[in-house]
Amino acid sequence: MMTTLKFRNNDEMPILGLGTFRSEPNEVYNAVLSAIKIGYRHIDCAAAYGNEKEVGNAIAEAIKQGLVTRNDLWVTSKLWNASHGEENVIPALNQTLEDLQLDYLDLYLIHWPVALKTGTEMPEKVSDFIPLSEVPLTNTWKGMEAALEQGLAKHIGVSNFNENQLKEILATAVHQPEMNQVEMHPFLQQEALQSFCVQNDIRLTAYAPLGSLVDENSKLRLLENDTIKNIAKARHMSPAQVALAYTIQRGIAVIPKSINEARLLQNLETLNHTLTEEDMALLKDLDKAHRFIDGKFWEVENGPYTADSIWNA
Ligand code: A2P
Image (cartoon, rainbow, N blue to C red; front, side):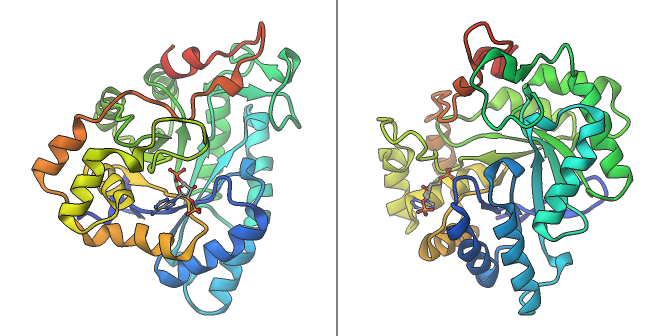
């Protein structure tokens, strides 16, 4: 099974990384340190996750213990929505670098095509938002390009962007986005977006690759799906490994989150398995275009963003 995604300059990103969203600060230190110990070399972070200082402490400790060098690791982070606008990107990135105790990121992404007023964590009212007509994505992209040119990020990209938003950036970019990180798993396969990205030399990373347990009331449970369970049994894999392997074999990076040592190892060991073409065909049929992260949290009455405008407009 392929183990890295290659970038334009031949840099290679490990195809399986550790997600840190919803890992509490007190849990994430141990998760990152254990992950590095057992062989993870790719850590996916974001300012918005509120835990970059602890992630940074764990990376520093791993380097101090001689487990890895900075160069061995691939670290991604993301620009929060309250820092859109060309002039805000480098200050936000510098804060992330300080928190992570790093002097560069391997990859920096615009977290969402949604702009919020400075200082807003999550929006509650219309006045918390800035419409994209006031801070166009192309303007924020110029700040991302400056970060690249200054060597603060080796690669730049976006997250949660749809095809039209990518086209808008591609039309004027000096440095094209190399990555789009979006929700993807067997219930949300996003084939049209994938082919657009492949045509434009944009790599994909799947977040919530295990179908995320964010919505505890959801009746749809990816890892309890019968097709996934049957393939898992036949191949001596766990359901999580089947879900991850499916996405990896589509050429897409995955960043499963775990704070549990056994599950960290189990997820990494996906790389020792390969699904057959028959398995792949059965899993392809599971697509339901179902989003666990539905984007409705960007909707307020009379606000400038709707989930539909984010995913489809
Ligand atoms: P935990 O951190 O306790 O392991 P996603 O990355 O799709 O958002 O999913 C993350 C969720 O899935 C977390 O709740 C995580 O819990 C759980 N999880 C991670 N790895 C596995 C696994 N191998 N099997 C089952 N659940 C897992």
